[in-house]
Image 1: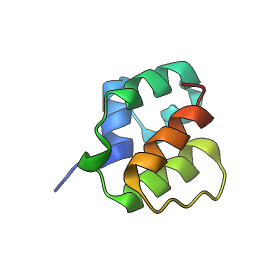
Image 2: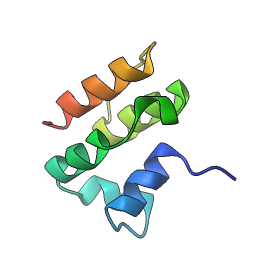
Image 3: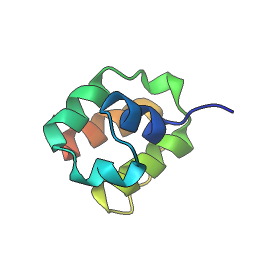
Image 4: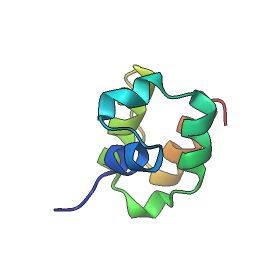
Amino acid sequence: MEIGLLEDLAGQLGCMYLSDLHRAERRRLSRCLQTFRAETYSLWEWNDAARYLTGAEIRFSDRKEAKKILLNALGG
């Protein structure tokens, strides 16, 4: 089974559960996401991560755009 974007992010930040991402400092989230390649994850995963991390119904049509806007939303 392939590990997804949110799971990778949680693992990199040392979170035991995905829900711990909500308590993580936004700057740490942003710095970690900067190291992720947009092409590594599906567009669905980027859209899901954006919704999960920001609480907003955001839909992207391009993975690179999704990463860029998500980083901006997190203050990165």
